[in-house]
Every structure is written in C-alpha cells, then in structure tokens.
Image 1 (cartoon, rainbow, N blue to C red):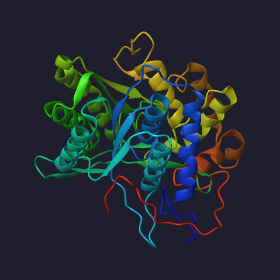
Image 2: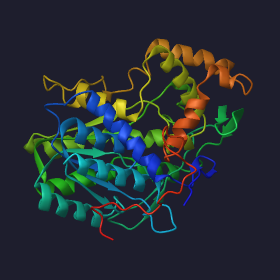
Image 3: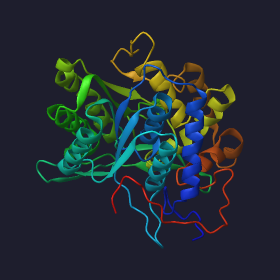
Amino acid sequence: MIIQPRTRGFICLTAHPDGALQSVKNQIEYVKSKGELENGPKKVLVIGASTGFGLSSRIEAAFGSGAATIGVFFEKASSEGKMGTAGWYNSAAFEKEAAAAGLYAKSINGDAFSDEVKQQTIDLIKKDLGQIDLVVYSLASPRRTHPKTGVAYASVLKPIGQAFTNKTVDFHTGAVTDISIQPVDKDEDIQNTIAVMGGEDWKFWMEDLKNAGVLADGVKTVAYSYIGPELTFPIYRNGTIGQAKNDLEASVTTIDNLLADIHGKSYVSVNKALVTQSSSAIPVVPLYISLLYKVMKAKGTHEGTIEQMERLFSERLYTADGKVPLDEAGRIRIDDWEMADDVQAEVAKLWDSVTSENLSEISDIEGYRKEFFNLFGFEMDGIDYEKDTNEDVKIPSIAE
C-alpha cells in the first residue's frame, strides 16, 4: 500500500509505519547520545504510552536507564489492507527497537480507564516484573466511561464565565483569523471535563497498583500538565481544561498519602507547549506554538517531547542528590525555558503583529506543520513515501 497523509482539520486520518519507526529511532538516538542515567528507573509502567510525552517517557526510561517497560494505550490495530493508528505503529516500532537492544517491553491495548485493563496490567506486572518503581500517567482522551458507575463523560473545550476572542491560525493554509468561543453554559460540562481529564483515574490506578502489591518501595509516579502564557489562559488554564488540570495537580496530596508507607512520591510535571494531537485541537494554541518555536529556536532552547523527557528524568526526577526541584505550588517545571521572561516578551510582541501576510516570516508555521505530520509518520527525512509499504505491522507482545 502507498500511504499518503489525509487530513480533516486537526486530525490526520492516515499513518505511516516506516515514518513512525524512523521517528522512534530518532528519539532513541537522542537519548543514547546523552549517556546512561545511572540512578534512573528500572521497571516502568507508562499509561498512555503510544504518542507524545508518554511515548517519549517510555523511550527515555528504556534507552536512558535500561528499564523494562510496560505500555498501556488504546489504539486501532493494523490489518491487511487497513492502516493502524499512529500510536499503534509507534508502539510496534518501540517494541522492535527494544527487542533489538535486549530490553523487556510489553504492551496492553485497551481502555485504560477500565478496571479490566488495570487488572490485566497488574497481572502482567506480577508475572514478569514483580514490582515497578515508576508509573508515568500520560493519558489523553476526550471521553471516559467511569469504571465504577458506568457513566460516560465527554470533555468540552470552552472558557468559563465569558466568551473568549483572540487570534488563531489554520496551520494547513496559514490563514490567521479571529475566533470567538462561547463560554460553557452549564456547570455539568465543567464537572464532565474534570471527570475525563482530572486526577481521579490516576488515583484509581495508584490505588489498584498499591493494593495489588506491585509498587516497589520508593516508587515514583508522575503525571503531566500545562500552564502556558496568559494569552491562552481563558481557553486553557482558566477554562474547562484548566479546571481538570487543577484537579489533576490536587491529586498529588492524596496519592502521596497513599504511598507514604512504601516511601513513594507523586509529582505533576508542567511541560512545554509542543505540537501534539491534543494541542492541535485547541484554538489559539497552534499560533502561539508557531511563534514560540520561532523564538526558542533562535535562542537555541527549543525542545521536542524527547528532549523534555530526557531533561525531566535527568534533571528533575532522578537527580544525583535525590532531590526533586519543585516550584512554590509543589510542581516540577520543565516548561521553564518556555516561560522565561525574555521568551514570553518576544512571543507577545510577535503576537501583536502577526497576520496571514507575515506569518511565514515571523513564525515557524512550517516547523509546526512538519511536526504535525511527523506525529503520524509523515515528512520524516529518509523515508520514501512513494514506495509500497506494508501497512500490517504487528506488536509482538499483543496477542492476535
């Protein structure tokens, strides 16, 4: 099958297995270039392991620390004549490279919100690893069925209190326009968003893992969040998503109490704005990222997900002295280079002047587009996209 990108809005409907493999290889090479993290984790569970920060976390753990990894995700498998999702191909590529390096890697494909997948994961840990010393929670989903009540929740992306109007960009066409987003009209939508994207499921995972006895003494767990600049606050940090992130961050106290008797610790890492499937769906954010990339690349401080995760592990979670640097709210800040005063001042200046006409000149919209397609295995250097490609790629550890 000859596989080409086919898009609908902020979604790419196709994915390329060879491109996914190359993307994973590139991330692995970066991690290996940084040297071994001597005091890093050795047995790791990544929940939401197939794309973005979750995938990069798994790569960093495996190839930076030699860790055995179990990845949980919910992706569409490939079959003859039918493409899998990008996350499926990423995970197949990861297992292939892990096996070649002699590293343990197994995956579970299913609804991570469900009790069934939690139990399946626990059974696999007991069978193969005994206990784990790091749990990465990097789940992103627009909806969730509650495992205890069976109630289905859907998240909404809206401001709270008043309408929000600002600039946005269609990154396919380069058109910069104003967009107005009406505020959420009922509290139920806020609560539903919290139910999907807040901290309850993270707590459920840690409770089940703890009760099953599969958490090692001194275990760490980390979940990912974002704050961003004030210009995105109405749609992000002060909007419905922000309420869910507040709930996620507030879960740290509960999880710390849960893990106290085994000397465990939980963290929320506030990460940098990057091109991900999730961020592409948020109005205003793609334009902000395009300007941010321009500024940070000029300063030599730009990072992708793998650079972020390498720095998170080596400079925050697993420091030589064992101390984890936190901000005044108790969070890890790996967005520090993004939020530097000089960076934000330059982005704000560009924001005021950006138009459709000068977008290509003053932003990195081309870099944004390329990274978007890279997420799905396209526009990767060294890949011949005109050749016939085997679309049916298996993940060895997942039974047919």
